[in-house]
Figure (cartoon, rainbow, N blue to C red):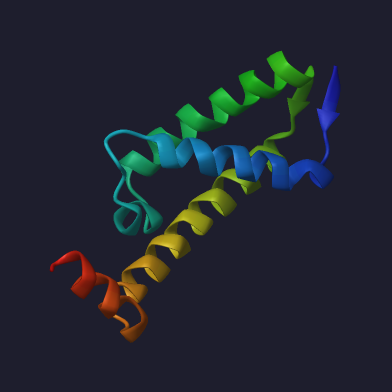
Length: 103
């Protein structure tokens, strides 16, 4: 069994980002990003799921450092994505789309 090295950190981060996006009900990333019981629960759930997935599919055991870094990078990416989405909702570039939809 191989230990998953940090050069594959982007793969694990991407996989975890997709998993975070699938969580239903949708998580409040603003609250979770500041730290919460939900964040702790999601961390435990998804890091275990990632470990099992990589072991089953690739026969690789992820190191605790890789899985930890990947999880928090994924959370950060999702949080930043939500911030940018909220900023773009009321910009001049999107006003014409809203007007078009409300006709």
